[in-house]
Image (cartoon, rainbow, N blue to C red; front, side, top):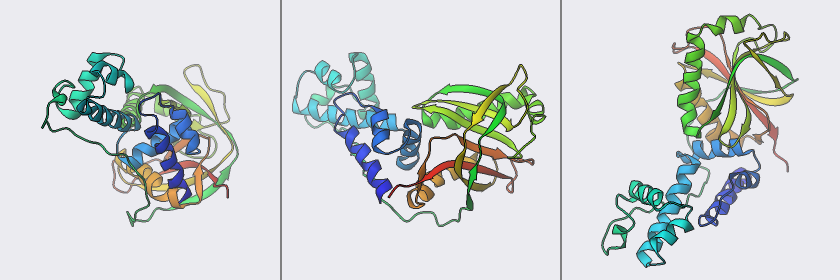
Amino acid sequence: MEWIARLNEAVSYMENNLDKEISYERAARIACCSTFHFIRMFTFIAGIPLSEYVRRRRLTLAAFDIQRGDGKIVDIALRYGYESPTAFNRAFHVVHGMSPSEARRAGVVLKAHPRMIFSMAITGGAEMQYRIEKKESFTIVGVGQHFSVKMEECFEEVPKFWQRTIQSGEIPRIMEYLDREPQGLLGVCGNMEGDDFDYFIAVASTRKAGDSFVEYRIPASTWAIFECIGPMPHAIQDLQRRIITEWLPISGYEYSNAPDIEVYFAGDQQANDYRCEVWLPVTRKSD
């Protein structure tokens, strides 16, 4: 499929530049999405962070070069992006369980991490309820935090931000601003660029933010809105993974340049029947 083909083209670009500088921005353009969404999609589909995949592939090729005697170890380290021999030795040992100099010996056992090639597979089978809706722009009011973390760390750091906000007693004050749709407490991921993004805990409002709160404008967009049922945060994290790996490749849609939104309704978030929504910004694929 076209979506998978573009993702494989982006991987080919990275594979062809493992011994050079790799631009995630360029890879994202090849995949026809933002850098943030490219890193996110890769991590969900591949099951490992993009940065870790690149690191393993480089150290696989470095091991081949070392065993072939293809240059000094310091030169091989530089070839694959390690300016410090110490950093190269440490990274090499993590992947291969030995130092680069030990890898020169005949008969040693090294690890090879092959290139990834993505293809469609029949998975899941569990239904996902969703609807496509166009929404006008609206403003949210609440608290926000800037994150600059790897995608896999988001699953730990964002819940911590929620916990701090709940413990601070800010949630009831934020809810006082709620006066328009969507009628729930929102988790909004915006200003996304690479590993950097802003996350807001907020509500939709027509009121001006008070001194302790911030405002953020959600642009007009088309959204794929998914129902999520189950205890937080695991239910919503699992749904987000399924949306990326199961729904998006076959949907006829692709990511658009707008924030990701989570809508949390009143209720016990640890209950098995707790209900919330995931809003994915989408646009129809061009023919």
